[in-house]
Image 1: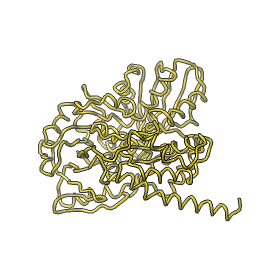
Image 2 (image 1 turned 30 degrees about the vertical axis):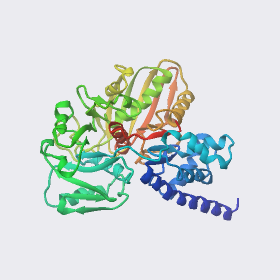
Image 3 (image 1 turned 45 degrees about the horizontal axis):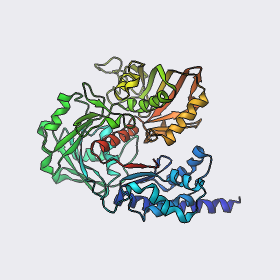
Image 4 (image 1 turned 60 degrees about the vertical axis):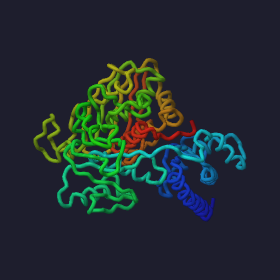
Length: 477
């Protein structure tokens, strides 16, 4: 191919990606349809990311998926009344073309494949969400909720509750939403209604409520009703504490973004989310580490059987550690986080059993906090019920990441160069590093990366959808 042909090919792909963007946006805003290419989200994706997501298809299938092959499917979707669906258009298109079908069949094919989500009328009621606390996870949840702003959006961020209220507080809260040292600038517009203590982000009006406890809040004053209160503070972790939220007028359910104690269900979406009942009013989304390791452990146990194992977490430092040496009630966490590796405890290995009881009593765990601000790794040393090879393990986890019910939780990489910063912003609960897999006889060591902030927040969003009965249907099944 000559230099001119390379440029011409690039120009064609770029123009097709640009043509996709407004259609992708309208499908979400008007019909609550989210598109992806082999798991890579296309909603709000830059032009270059759309092109790159197509290039990744070859790694998974051994075959190219050209933009001119996927574009007709996106065009056809814009003519169909598909609603409340997440469609992997890459997998749909790849299957269609691999079956030797003709382009004239695309629309009829989509009608057949998506029949259960085609409806001229959307009767799903939008639900109110309140973020109680606005720290690292709270602000990322806000970003994820706001990026989905549109008339068809079924989860609407109505308010955030924080302590404070001193002069300048509102501007500081908005500034922290606008700018993030790890995840970059907010994708959109943020301005203030200072008179009414509100933030307007991408047209979404978010009331800022100042309160020192749930007892001080009456959500109905702000037109909020039957709301899901997402507690990001970590102050309360049992039914007595979290139950305070339910005493607030306008609150209906509570979700804790941390492990919970007592009889509260700890939910890892993809593993035990079907345990959520309409009658559940208080739930936990477990921890970032529990969410990262449980799907992979389930995949391994289902296929090979886990006799026992140890999970060592190499975790980025968090806000509960000290920047410089100072008093801390926990052992070692008082030492400077940016300067030290710090051995500490983690309950994630034992917490796996709350979401996946099959592994109760089979796992131990520990953690090392390291001087990086985000993205962590779980090293899982497993004794299995059968002999395996590296190829056996990797092939199973690769297929699980692409075609199983855990495809939205587990990602898989074959890169020999990937490092932690490459995975900032990953929307998966965990990413299997296949090049680091070790297997000998019936023993296996797995290395699983995870964005302990953003990937975890995506899992929380999925639990929220389930609690509010506004889940999306996934295609292909």
